[in-house]
Length: 216
Image 1 (cartoon, rainbow, N blue to C red):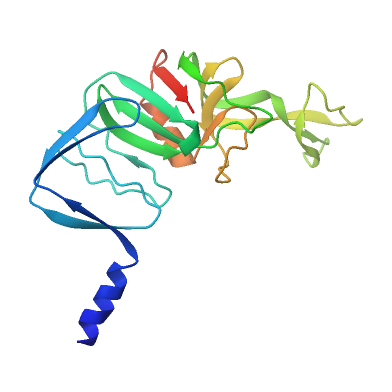
Image 2 (tube, rainbow, N blue to C red; image 1 turned 180 degrees about the horizontal axis):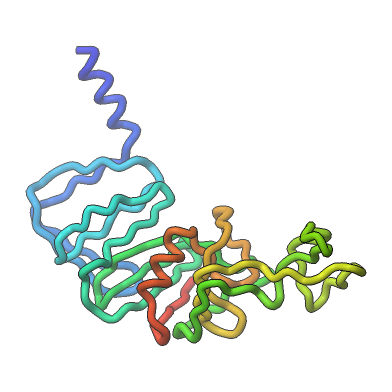
């Protein structure tokens, strides 16, 4: 009796979804998925993104604790990316099939990320910002951090050290997708930051010219 009670309490700490034998749904940014399965309950810890069903066989790559996942290997279709600012998420499609998702950090209120339809204009694995970074002394010590070299005076004896933007993909102007810090809310200078593991995956699966849609 004690074991049954403990199991019941544990299940209350998870989100529960009752699925029917046939179901379909709309993926974020377009496309759809359909699947067949026996009725069942699925339990997932709070805060995780439930993997979308698709007509392709499931690839056993688990959802990461930050809600990111990738199931694009062996899936055909032209790639496209949809960034949803209000969700602070990026969705990766191949054709109409949602194959990946990642949390992001978009621009702050002062430096908003532009919305619209764009394409990947440029890719640079080891990109350095020409605008934002630090002023460092001759020994590499940071004298002033998080500066904008267009308006922040450079202290005597220092040089500009551009912010590192690994796995950079330019979307428009100075705005691009790249590896970076995610505080959990929109706080960048306009770029779209991704965690390292997903920035690398997106970069490796996104050829130049890939459509990128950014919506609120």
